[in-house]
Length: 295
Ligand code: KIV
Image 1 (cartoon, rainbow, N blue to C red):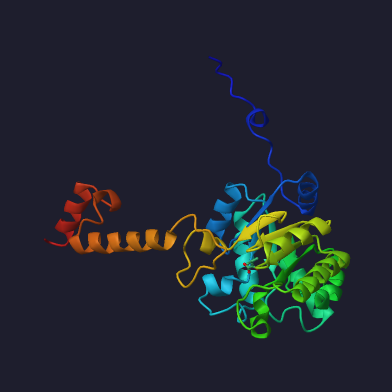
Image 2: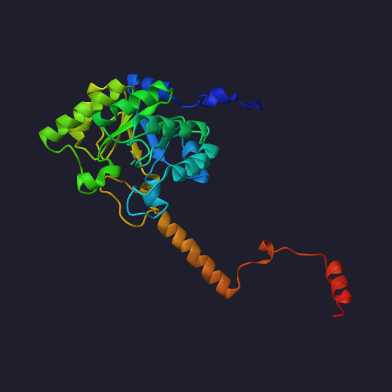
């Protein structure tokens, strides 16, 4: 048996940072792109360790971490704070900061300035924003500033009030045609990738075939160039509701609740902390103290 350690690249391909170029190459080669959300350092570490291509610091943060009923209250400061934590945890995944409601809708100038903050202050590699043709001008200017932009069409949660709630989109021929046009407009404006959320799978596949840039689906079927899920849905950490398109791979809410109950029971029974979890001092020091205290 040889005692020589194999060189790293003999046993595993050398891992490199995922970039917009990786996205392009993966689409060209027909390789699936994976993306998950993260909002903090430990989750970013775990997602990166799993070899996921891209981490989205989504404004879903508002719902799954901050407890708001929707994403509308999320601010730039909330996003930057969580993006910084994720950037400290992830080494390889491409990091995408989600532009929150009203951080890019007021003017193209506002959109460019806020997009810049994600890269300059928070260590992100790209930004994502919601909307189709109506956002093309902002996407174009942000890209011209050197900031990669991921688009997001279909169910766009920042527009729930105009969409009438969290509802699937593009289910009629007219609505589907509008989404095809939106997708092309975003590609023409320079977006490097596009999220398709909660749209019919046939439509998502058609858009994915028509576009040169990769599509990342969520509730959009298997015909997309990649898939994304909200991590808290995937690991079962969000208690309120699980969209039908989510697959739960773990039940972390229950795991946490069980651990907390076990802690409570052991503290009540005084079986925690044990000596192994306690700080001790030498007998001679203890006796000296008792002597000094006259006890
Ligand atoms: O905010 C988010 O997590 C998202 C994903 C659902 C794509 O936009």
